[in-house]
Image 1 (tube, rainbow, N blue to C red):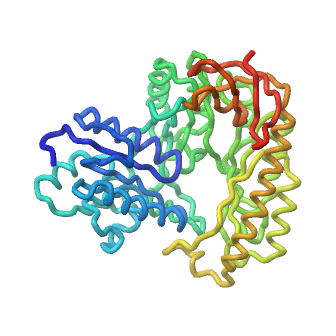
Image 2: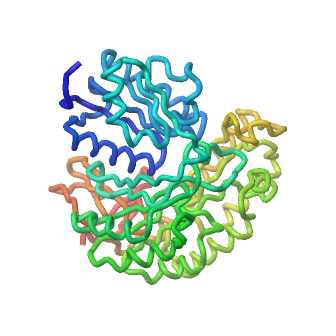
Image 3: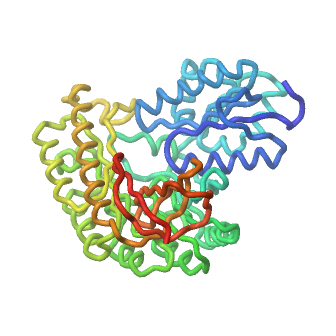
Length: 433
């Protein structure tokens, strides 16, 4: 093991955009102290797994990543941090061969824990009392992609019957708007073309500062520049008509809304302890489509929740099919230990869960094809993200995944394009104007 701070560190991130922004922030802290960032998969002195535990699949990927890190770097330090580490901190069997286990708050002091471990060479497991966590750690992803994810909120005060996130992330909290305004100004000064506002329950912003989400949107929209903003996700009960109308007329916000529904059945929504019924969701989607007909509307849906009958599922499919939405993010329900839903009666067979997932993925493809087709011929601004030679790829302001082939040079700044058609893979193609 090398002495001092001149060590190679690889960070592997699982899960949400919030995790990616935090990994980027923690990585920069380590680099400032002399650590050398290398890609995950190369032999490292320190391998960091930023864990997720939102589903059973996320748990498995976390364990697989830990095993991979140990196999590639058997003599290195292995770190597991984040949600899975917080939730499983009392389970020693979950962290065989892991040297540092750091929970939701402790991960931001990774460097100090590395020093402590190297001095004593004894495994460290540290996780806070999540009920007492009220500290907000700022984070933003810079350098990994053209777009930047800016953390504006953390934690959740909701009690959805299937979800472990409040136990992993703590209560809802956020920084003051004036702090985020300064962070956005800094990002804009660096030429960042798109800033994505992210959090656990983003629309709940203001809970700890007596402010509101729309106050934040209005404040940062006044910052001059050619950048654009995107809201990563917002709950339907928190997405107000005022927010929709503001985005319609704003200088920088994109016409893209990602709204968790979770079920198209009122009966299942009630069992999930969601804070709305589908009528609320329908009204919000209909209002968006009326005011911003070219807006992209994405929807999160869970299939196979306990007690979800064939009638519930078919009702949900018909409901989703009737809405002017653009795509679905489909999640297959998995039991989360410690949640009320894990003990609910009438669990759905895994085969049925998988079949329902396939149905909704097919519906998503149909919705996306219809939305993309409606946009052919329109002129859009594309923020490039791809690094493939001869191809420019990226997202338009209304979140159309777009490809431009046979280009002679790589473009990193936003470009104006005309959407020209769909390729064989169902992806949008475009020509530079």
